[in-house]
Image (cartoon, rainbow, N blue to C red; front, side, top):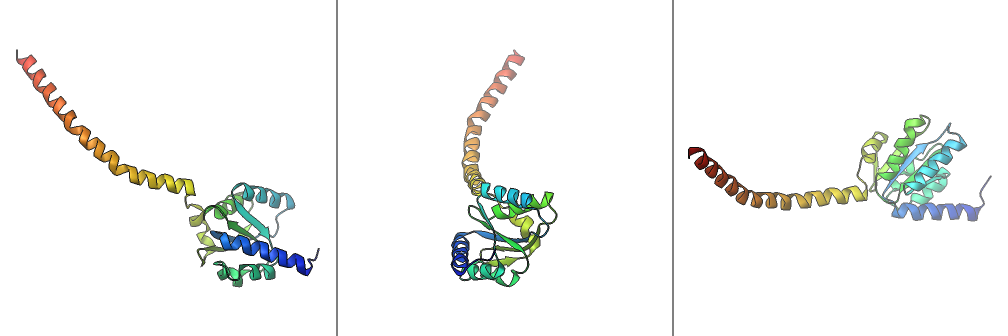
Length: 176
């Protein structure tokens, strides 16, 4: 079904609004996927905080103009779906990568993070980025480590004294 001008403008505005706040973008060719497979991909994306949309390439090119994803404009050819990460940079890559394990017909064409166009093979690396909660957890572990080491070191001084006194006591008891 063809879109009229107002519908096209609405699509461009919607995608542009998402692209302006997104952390990363993945464009993948979906040729050969069934409607049920696409529906399951959309459900997974929605659950992970990923905006997933099939948009005509001309509309997608207009939508990404003026955003950090303008670098993908030249690669928008063929039947593509766009996935934008809303919560953490690796979420779109994780959703697409996991879906590709079961469905070989989904082929990644473009990957972009921070205004930089990456090779499609970088999807694996992007998908391994920690989530926000995982990153905070790693940071807290790094911040907590010196304090724990100091506490263990300070605790070792009286512990060593107690072991030395116990050894002297045992030696005197053995000699008597």
